Length: 140
Image (tube, rainbow, N blue to C red):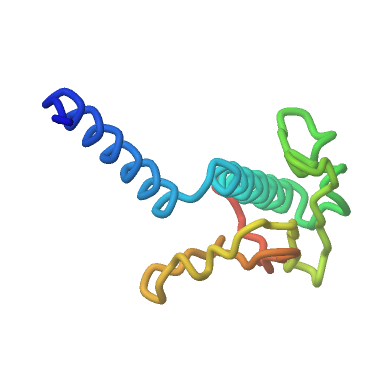
């Protein structure tokens, strides 16, 4: 039986597409893994916004807020209080007069993704992870 040129071309195209899909999944991870990475990025974004709101509160009032809920009640302050996936509240805890923690539960360990030269403050481990922050005055 003789194989046609179109049959070989079709088989080659299917093989190339299959290899590309497998390579993409290996390099980028599954859609579920990508979803979890995006949720982790959202958690970091939410915590950064909360830290900025804490800094602004410190600048205006000279003290740390008692809770994230207190911040969210202030006019013009938009602090996300809940995890985008679990809808559990983010954790906020005052440690001293000018130091506090913001905590969340993360799916991935981003500390492994960053090398020592480019370590980002917001890198985190998987599971419950807390960022220890010192309040900064914001220019008015």
